[in-house]
Image 1 (tube, rainbow, N blue to C red):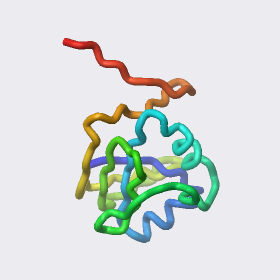
Image 2 (image 1 turned 180 degrees about the horizontal axis):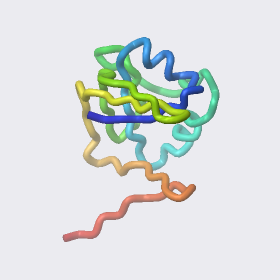
Image 3 (image 1 turned 60 degrees about the horizontal axis):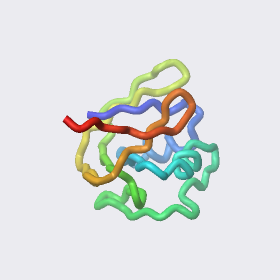
Length: 115
C-alpha cells in the first residue's frame, strides 16, 4: 500500500477520487522542472508534458524513474488534508535512474558508497 495527503482545496483530487485510481510517478534526477510544474496550482498540468497512459488510463510520465499504479483503498480526514491510502496494482522501475530528491528546500542527489 501507498499513501499521499492532498490538500482539501486540491483541484486535482476530485478527478482522482472520481476515477478511484491514481498513479504515483517517482521523478528522476534532472526532472526538477516537472516537479515544479506539478506542484504549481496550474489546472492544465499536463500541457507540454510527455506521457503515456497505463492499461487503466492513468498517466505515466516520460522519463520517470518509477511509477506505481494504485486503487483507492481508503480516505481519511487529516486536518486540512485528506489521507488517501492506495492498494498497489502495478508498478515498474528503471534500474539505472537516479531519483529526484527534495530535502530542506533544495533538490539534491542520492550517492551510494561502494560496499
